[in-house]
Length: 171
Image (cartoon, rainbow, N blue to C red; front, side):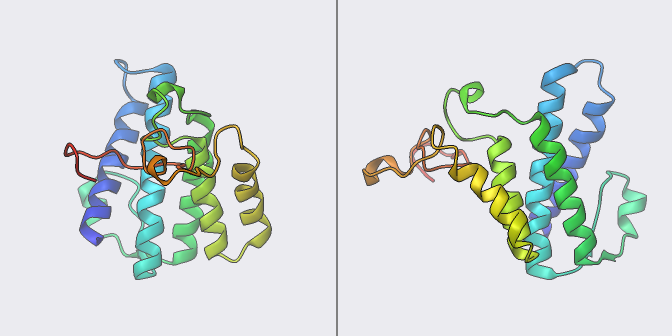
């Protein structure tokens, strides 16, 4: 888990660095891709900090800096997670139309859900409630599916964010 999370973090950092300096990809697309990278970085750090406690907080691809990075206190990691999620949700889509209705890429709602979970782990009950309520109140996007055959589909209204299978007919 440690190695895979840090690989995702490295790729996220590379995307962020390169898209912010790109002339080939710009505008709304670049902003959305940077937001997705920040979401993935926050998601990865969330699991790292909860599994291992203090972890190195790497925000660059500079191998010289990363090679000597020491563990950052968990509070500092949580601060970065929240900052990444706050930044990400500004540019993430507000619905699933950009993805053909499938819930396979992060949206503003995935960032809100993860932020609610972060606040729960930090025992910030009011902030957690506020983030969770924003999802619950979005019944036009999210609802309980009565037919169990419809729960695990790419367009299920129960899903906030789900991973797209990379091998056909295998989840």
